[in-house]
Image 1 (cartoon, rainbow, N blue to C red):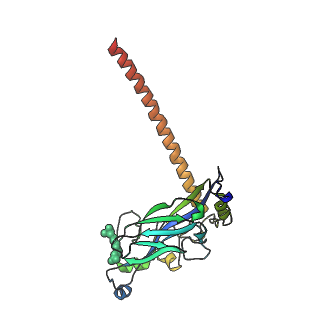
Image 2 (image 1 turned 30 degrees about the vertical axis):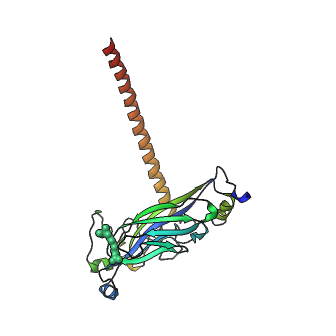
Image 3 (image 1 turned 90 degrees about the horizontal axis):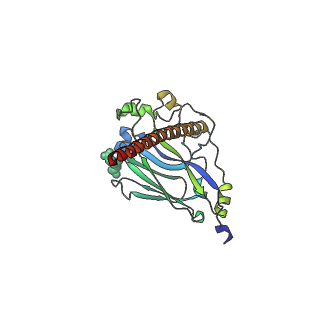
Length: 252
Ligand code: SLL
């Protein structure tokens, strides 16, 4: 079949984000639940990296169903039917709960892609990040003021040597580019943007600048690893020489 021909040497990627947003429930909301011990409502999702302009959703500008067939979210076993299959966009699950846990996120691609499914792990985050990075659960009143918690990971799904027909599908759906820099003042690492920005409905977003900075961090780290490897290799060669020398001494 002609369209099952692989385009050798071609690499094409699609930027995605996965993660969650969580909002603390008011006492009234808690009382209205069949599970009044639940303290938060949350949504875990796989989305396109770019956000739609003026949207209060992190990411999600593009519909990813042209290459994603199914996303399986494996929740904590305290949830009924913890394995949740989502076969159409939005690829997300919303729940209420009281605890943070690890969610397995398995992405199955459209069959035409011939690609194997991939798995990500996301730690469901319910509580605001603190400056010190210490876990600290704020009292309800304060949590309500701080607004939603966001925890999102940017990633790129790379397709190597794609099938010709799948490549055509991908090329027909170019991803919305990330904005160069932030259009909104909300930082990512601090989920609680402060009551002022929270009241403006501030939502963090991924930008091309962040991508660039991440690339630079990776490059710096790579250089450090290379330097360190060189240093130890040199030391190893020296020690091996010494070993040879000592062996010879021993023999003679
Ligand atoms: C913890 N290791 O102890 C974690 C477990 C489980 C969270 C968290 C809802 C369960 C239900 C829920 O929030 N489970 O359906 O009632 O923090």
